[in-house]
Structure formats: C-alpha cells, structure tokens
Amino acid sequence: MPRHGLLLSLCLALSACASVAPAPVDPALHGDAARPAAAQAWIRSELYFSVGTEGQDQTRIDEAQWRAFLDREVTPRFPDGLTVFEGYGQWLFRGAAAPERQRAKVLVVLHEDTPARVADIEAIRVAWKRMSGHQSVLWSRQRADVSF
Image 1: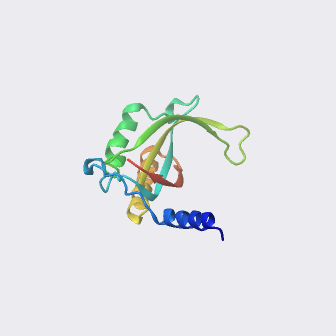
Image 2: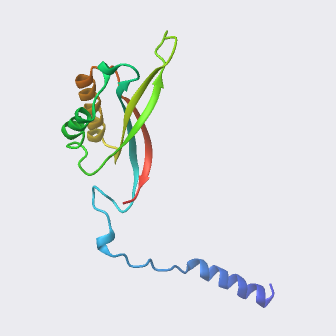
Image 3: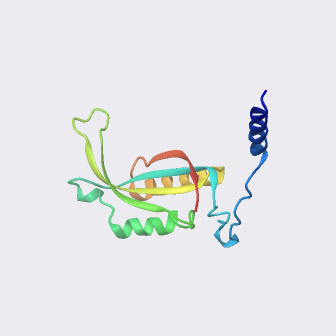
C-alpha cells in the first residue's frame, strides 16, 4: 500500500476513536421526574368526551359542568399538566340511518406507561360515564418520546 494510502487509513481509523465532549448543561435546564429533560416510552393518551348532541339540549354538558369534572376527577390525577381541545365529531350507531353529530372535549395527557397511570385514566372514564350517563369515552393511546 502506498504511504499516502496507509497514512490516510491511519488518520481515518484514529478519527473514529476521537469523540467530542458534550457541552456542559446547566442543571437548572434538566427536567425533574414529572417533567423530564427527555423521556422515552411515555404514552400520549387522548380521551374523547361527548358534551352535547347536535339538536338535543338535554344531553348538553355545559362549560361549568365540564370544568367541575376536570377539577374534581382529572386535575388531581394529572396535576403536572394536560391539554383540552374543543372538538366536533360524529358517530354512527349500529342500525342507525344517519350519524349522530356531537360536540366534544378532547383531553390529551402525556404520562408514564405504568399501571398506576392506566388506572388513573380508567378512573376518569368511569367517573365521566357515571356523571354524564354516557356509555363510553373513547381512549386512544400511542407511544411518545417527550422532552420538557
């Protein structure tokens, strides 16, 4: 092998061994256990709550009822944070001729994938069904890598 090729090979091999030290990070910028700087295998849970069927005022959950439910059932279980979106959707019941159109609240919670967090979500769903008389609360889960 010519000297230039040997020298080039040696330089490449040595550069692969070199590493750059990570930049120092201010400890104040690291997350805590509830709000990690980076966490893998968390869950993004979305819960869909019907708060009113189009054209039927008797099924409507008003803003005060929703807020009371949020304060009583959700916030104590997830005090570190959550997001609520206004939604609109439709649902076709089996055998129905047309879909039922509904206003909705979509609750988004990012949480650890633990049995305790799953139990908290399930308790929220049960509490809503008891309070509202509804048959279901849709729960969508997906893995999420988060950083705060």
